[in-house]
Length: 321
Image (cartoon, rainbow, N blue to C red; front, side, top):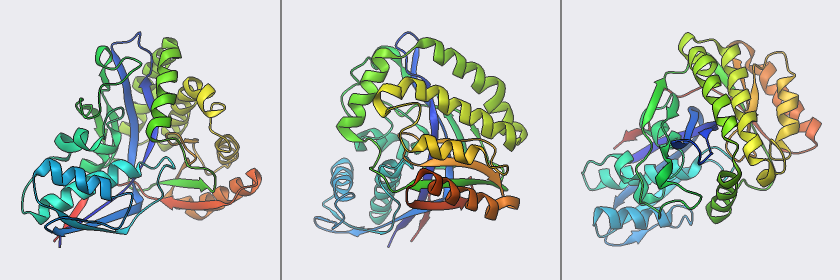
């Protein structure tokens, strides 16, 4: 039985939301080793899937491959709509599991638009393919006005930069027990409003930050400067989203970011995607202290939640049969 295992990703933000520039979006993020998601599939004469989040993807894949059906189960998963990229990982894992069940080959990047993925950021698709730190090239702005193209009528953004993340880096991943982040129609509406109002000057600042600090830091394995620069990139993105999410960070992410940032073992902290997940960067030498910093951040914000300290993932999704 083909089994595909993949994992979460962090999304630090976009390079541009302004219609004044030639390329729109342009995601920046990286792959984590946990939490993970596992999908199994076998051939069937119809769609068989009792997981409501997965079943629509099974139907799309069956239609795209022109096969009679598939029996699909999800044995391990991570929370949806919390900023960890579960939708893209679930859809692509479902695709590859069914493809292998029929002893075929398929490129995840090619099929992603048919599954509704890669319409803005290409980080999730690239993370599924190869892990690591990713900067994507975004989309031509003339095709992505305030109203995006019809679903599937796009190509996944190209990867402009890819680097392995040092194996001794660790990411504190704090997920507060609050309402899920935006997705679907609500996310589309918020992005539309942000694009319509986006200050092009913020994109200019991000361009400088990316080329002079983020990319040099990952290339030279400077975790302190990388964490601080990635945090700055997130704050600049938050200025675009302030009206849609109630501030530079979506509450209570701001309190969590402030608390994590003040911990001596943390080099930069920020919100992943629409949140509510918050990340902080440390190293393997300070795992226990970093975990405690995450717990204290939740306590200070007065919310329950989960805290993980996880390694980066520098390989793509794995397949066993």
